[in-house]
Image (cartoon, helix red, strand yellow):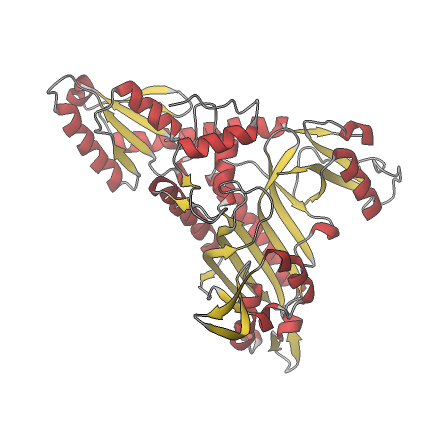
Length: 474
């Protein structure tokens, strides 16, 4: 197999090569940007879905599934929303040979599919809050260069939609979503920053948008999720109102929370190295691979490996036994490329003693004793996740730097923390200087945005300044 490109010398070339070499997806399908989920990639996606479902259901959200097609009449009710998505919409205008009376949209997102039904479901304040989510495919005619997981035309999409009794309750739901994502990111060992986007870059139809961003080198950032507060911007055109406790009528306040397969791309981007993918245990297709090693005719390691695999599977550990005819070195190379968190090597001596040699994806080696093998493997996986997070956190911190002058933004290789007065004109000056975007203001505590930010980096005003981040979105 050809040597992988260096991650440090060219992120995009490295990323594309790693995704292909690890066989996470097949991009050779006949529609550009609509990729095939391979068995290995599908297992990773299924594990990722399980993390998202676990954390969102812990907040009281319930699953639903809405149809893929949206009538044009419903899609066009919210003018700012349609303006934001119109250029990316796939239209269905015929059913067989019959021209449709009302053209249909392949959903780019589900506000306009769900909200006519929410209007039927919600009648009284006793019907609130309504917190529901779905994991479905959405479709957007992406005109930029497509890249597996990061920018595609058919998107594996998690979306929560909620209706709340008032603005304060909706704001609380945004905070709940931020907490849910914090737990998801912890499971994935992903450091990130939550950023409130500037008004000119918020989601179409939103009151405000909070993006979840990670740095990916050379001042570039990747948005891996978003949370939106709508106020009444959608409930008004869709008539989603309820009877209050005193008999009056009120419109609901709404929020959404969106994640996609881009989160899987982020795992590859952040944790991967020049040897391949590195999966945190939570989303690894196989958390443990057992490699039996024996001389010609030695069956004991294989039998012991299968017994050990059964024990680990009973504990809920996703385990694979590699009984292929490849040499041990080739197996090690393959599973390192595939990002398996822990490899267990089992030779005749280990099989006889009831031990195994554990090697994690960071190269740390240990011998697991015969007592409580299952518990020892669980500890090894947990320690690996912790070490993976510490490694990612060090790289995350090194990706940011404070800028005090517009000239500091030119030819920068870091995401910049800077002072901004909040004026759009100053924001655009910052964007021009960095040849990228004013990403917004940190929504949560952020180590590079603490203390007095000082005067605005663009206009010099000290009035109403705040910390902001600027970079080059991928």
